[in-house]
Length: 294
Image 1 (spheres, rainbow, N blue to C red):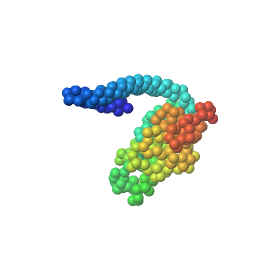
Image 2: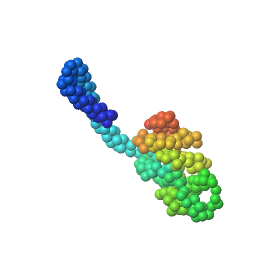
Image 3: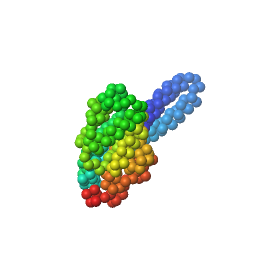
Image 4: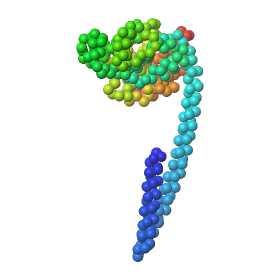
């Protein structure tokens, strides 16, 4: 907006200069009084337009300053209120986080869930399971050759299994090959899995082979699965996740999204967020059951 106004004002100034030159030339030409009169009238009209644009620009600048101040206040408010809203709601719950498209949001998400009292058992980032040396990987794993989708699905299943059982042999090979990143403790009692989808790159979208394999694995074992993504995700996974009947949050990078996830895990399932796939922004604030009150 400011740039458009700046260029518009600059254009008007250029017109002023041209008119000024025209008036000088017209006054020196015999019979040029009519031309000078027209140019002077046009100049007055342009002066009014320029004054209007200056006032509009000043108003917009003041508006932006006001919005920035309000935004800063809002962020400070949210940072203070979030811990109060989620405190203790996930006490005693063991949660694993799996990122399927390499958004690198696991640490932030883990901090939020910890603030709610949860134990983060493990974090795993798959980055779309991009395999650069297919032949070498198959040799290290001692697996037979197969098509890419079958291989990707098998790897996703092995990763899900390792999260639950602690058998991390395959994970070690994948991490050594920089195909995945891992953190935390694998194996042991697990209550919930948060799968972070949404992709910035169409080439990383492997929902059928990766995300669905992971979701089906945990659901078949009675473990709750929650699908989340950032509000800015170029390729949304939410509608696909909802086909699997799991709770979704499409704005996990915001405080409302983070509150929604915590309340969903503590007893308020649903489809939350700001995209067309969401049914509401937030769960009812009085309906979530604290995990330690069950």
